[in-house]
Image (spheres, rainbow, N blue to C red):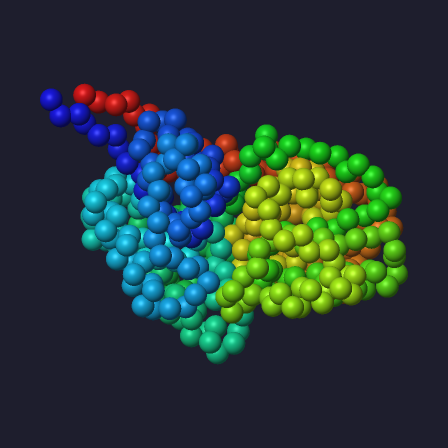
Length: 385
C-alpha cells in the first residue's frame, strides 16, 4: 500500500543563514504542524547545511548571488529553482528577499497547483539611490515584480510605505491579497532583556552589512563630531563586508579604525554578546528597509534606538519614548541625538525598557508568525497511510 506523502512547503531565501536566523521560528511552526519543509538559498558551508538537516529541513542550493547584476547567472538561478520544483512538487512556496521573490514566483507560474506566498523584506539598493544606473535597475525591477507577483496568493509587506509604493507603481493591483506584518518578528526569549551594566562609558553600536546605504559613513561622521567633545564614548561596528556596488571598501574601514573613530568587530554568528556590551543601538539607514531585524534584536535586549525617519526604520521607534528618529544622511542630527544620551544617561535605561515593551507587544515573532500561518490557511497534518 502506497504511503501518502506529507504536504510540502518550499521556502526560498537569499542567504541560507537567514533561514535559521530570520525564518527559523516560522519553519519550526511548519515542522511542528507536520509539514515537509524544503529550503533553497545560495550554497552554504557543510556545518550550516548540517544545522538545517538537524532541524528536519532538507536543503537544495541554488547559484544565487544577491549582490551581483549578472543576467546569465540569474538565468541559472531560474533554471535551478525550476528543476527543484519539478522534482519536489511542493504544495506551497514561500519566498523572501528581492531575487528569490521575483525568480521563484516567476518559476511557480509554470506549476499552477502551487500556492505562492511572498514576503517583501524591503526594497533595498535599487530603490535607495538616484544614479542613472539605479534608475534603470529600478525600472527593470518594477517590470519583473509586476509579472512575478501577479498570480501570488498572498503578499506580505513589512511596512506600509512599501505596500503604498507597489500600489502607486502598479506592481500590485487593488484586488491582490496583501497583508501588513510587523517585520520578521523577533524571538523575545532568545533575545532576552539585559540591562546596561554601566554608563561610565557609553557605547554606540551599529550592526549591518558594510553597505553605504545603511548609513555607515553617516555614523562615522557623527562619531567624529561626538569624539571631538567627549572622551568616555565609543563607537562599534559589526557586520560582514559586501562586494556589491553599494559595498564599503575595507581600506576605508581600516582608516576609520586607525584614526580611532570606530572599533570594527568583523562578523559573528551570535550578535547577543555584542548587543549586551553596548548602550545604544544606531542604524542611520536609507536602504529602503523592510523592518531592520538588527533593530528588533537590540530592542528585545533593552537598548534604546536611534534610526532614520525612513520606511521600515520609523516603524521601530516611538519618538522620545524608546529612542529618536533623525533625517537620512544627516550626521549633525544623528550626533545631536547621540548627545542626548551622553548628557542624560538615565535615558538609556528608561528608553531601553520601553524598547523591550514594544518588542514584546508589537514585534514578538510568535505574533508575526500567527498572522502568516492564518493567511496561509495551514492546518496540522498527521502522516496519512
